[in-house]
Length: 469
Ligand code: ADP
Image 1 (cartoon, rainbow, N blue to C red):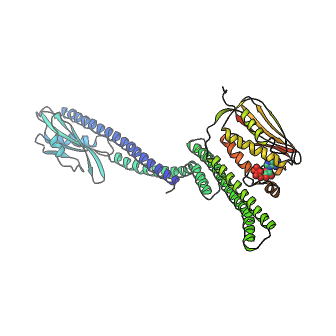
Image 2 (tube, protein in one colour):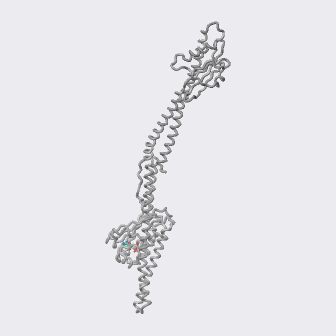
Image 3 (cartoon, rainbow, N blue to C red):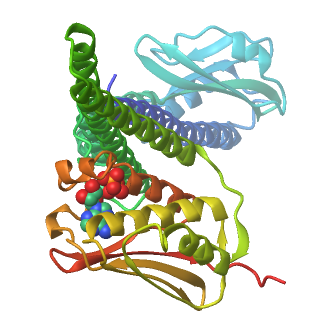
């Protein structure tokens, strides 16, 4: 069942109960009050009739010491008519409760008569046919006699009013319920609109529309829920985008890996086949063996680099505050003299929070790339700058540079701007990818500035380590 329908149903049930009970209570209260008033009036009338009877009995001639029965009848008949448009219904009985006078239409058992006694006034409410009466009983002291006077007062109107009251209230209740239903239908539809919008949102998201945001139309709890739903959708969208990017990167990586593997393997297989199936002269044999060796070496370098990247990606290095001078000394020792380049070292003393061997790997890769990008004898500047909160390493060359549109791609695994040139220099497009992974461990990133034909500058900043003794 729909939520809005549930709200509607429950409201109608509560309204029906509330209106029903309050109506019943109200009509009944009016009825009880009227009945009480009528009973009071009937009792008063009974007393007045008794008093009138006693007064009338006073005018009996003095010769009677006891009120004679025919005088009783006479007085009763007078009282019965007693100035009213409709005659009263009376019954008068003597001391032994024998009936002396009965009005026409007074058809009543004598149950009440037997309950009535001297100073005991009685009444009861009875139903005769379609009519209701208050039947009262009282005693009358008249001329040495105690007589019983019963009176019947028609109170059918009170009961009719109650029946009419109930019927009117039933109609009012039905009209109110119908009107309430219409109003609640509109209200519940408005109240549940945010829920409908959210449902639409979840459906759209389930169908893959992660950019969909539910419209917030209220500031209450449901509005807050919509807000939370939208922020959850935002987080989900971001995560999915990230996952998609990761999957894409992995697929790209696999494609590039397969491609990079294919080239050296094709060369190796081709030359090996030539060696085994043809009788080659010595020079060609040596050349083929050389190809196999160099391509094998390239494969080896590539697999080692790949291994390094995988290890670096998983590694949680223990960073330590280390002085930077030994790092530069290591680079000097490694490159100066062994490469035909003009190296310039300019570094400030300082410390950096690092895993020293990993940072050496990064710098060796950067200097190696700088050498590969420069002509023999080219100038390569390796510098270090102590910053307020860290230490900046930079490797600058004045070589071929990198086209702007390639800049964001060169850190991807297996990416080489000029593949044949890179391969000829034993490149596999993995060095920078490794640098990026290592710098990630150091919460740092590689910054690259480059211009085609003018050279490049690769730099990164490491957090400043504590003071070393
Ligand atoms: P590799 O050097 O093994 O090819 P890298 O990941 O280190 O792989 O570099 C990727 C590519 O980026 C290189 O092939 C080269 O095209 C380009 N590159 C890197 N460093 C430089 C540089 N200093 N100057 C010009 N191009 C560079």
